[in-house]
Length: 123
Image (tube, rainbow, N blue to C red; front, side, top):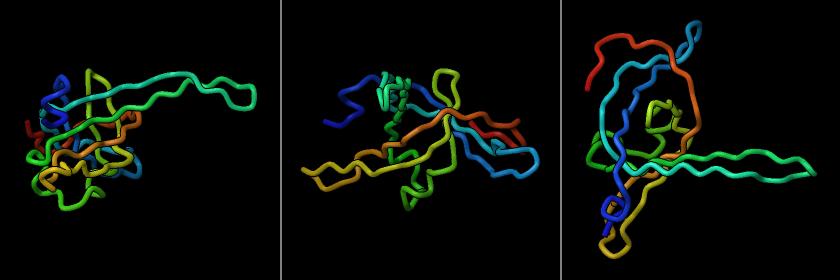
């Protein structure tokens, strides 16, 4: 069984980001896909200060990213899940140890704001 068999799939939009200088980061292309989204939040205490901590991950299917030859290729792009935009700040490959095959990529996400679309958007 894979993570996609065990958990509920969530639709998301993959955002191909172009780094901008004056106008900020822009969305070059977007593609609608589905994956497994996990949002965790809680409170951590450090030096008598409570801080709200929120982390999000998204498990995506390798077949949706055939052109990606390294997990580093995800970093700097973004996703939109449930109307919220996130920047991809890290990615790891999830292997199936029984079959020794790539099962999924896990994307580590941080909240982000992106500029307007430009060029031809793809869905």
